[in-house]
Length: 365
Image (cartoon, rainbow, N blue to C red; front, side, top):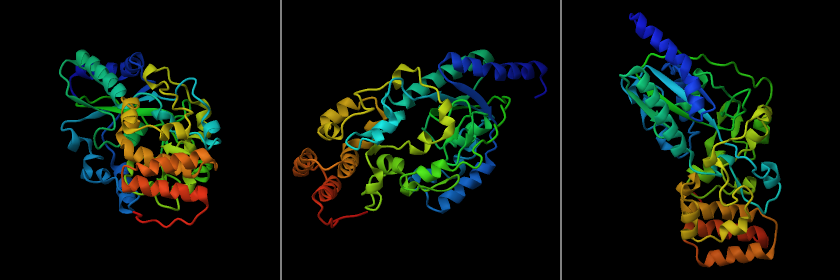
């Protein structure tokens, strides 16, 4: 860039972006270059091992995920943002996990769908940027396209990727969402922050299904978050008892992380708890019919898994719940009206756990 005025303007905007982001409700903003070559190789190595399970979208876009200019032509830099999500006044995660009659839902999903919240804020930030420079081309992303959001956030100085493969910030832990703006402005890269996991391996040890097979490598096929959210089939029999009462996602590897002692609560109203999902009873949620599920989950990220997977996940959790006549009655009642072979199969498994009878699967994916 040879124009001194343009150079000065870019430097000024690069310095102001973090403040603009905070004014719009983000907790941090950084800038990344578009060189993701190191992350690209790690991605392909991971895919070659089939650790992505049935998430075919992880590979179908080829190199668009790791080469930003192939996804958005003309991209010169990426603005990366993070926003805290842990809601205020939520029931203790550890308490819920230690009460197997309650339903554990990952804390990011207790409120409204974060996709819309972050996208609207990112659009406002991009418009403010556009107003400052005039001629601007951009696109905003929140889990909406093939984007390597965590490596981008690392290059933008928002944190480092921990051994559990989540992004960690030493001042804010890991309970936050990420979003991006691809832009044709040659903004100044923030600079990556150093890693601070050290010799700690708590996340590997605590994982209920041992899905973190080695530091920085996650096998999604064993991950409870994948099984309860992304996976549409029959949950492997060997993993069902290990899932406990986790019906949507899993936070164990983050709950154990020492850096989350510094995690900040979210002040965003949209992320506050809805329908007491932070400590709801399994039987209460299992009793919902499809209309109730769709109505109460309107605007929630949980809605996208659909009623069938909702019942499947709850059936597994009820199979792991303490023996009680009410649990058996609820399972038997739902069995009579099972909406699909998949739901029926998981209810039959749950009943077998309570009746102490051998379970012989009729269909197992």
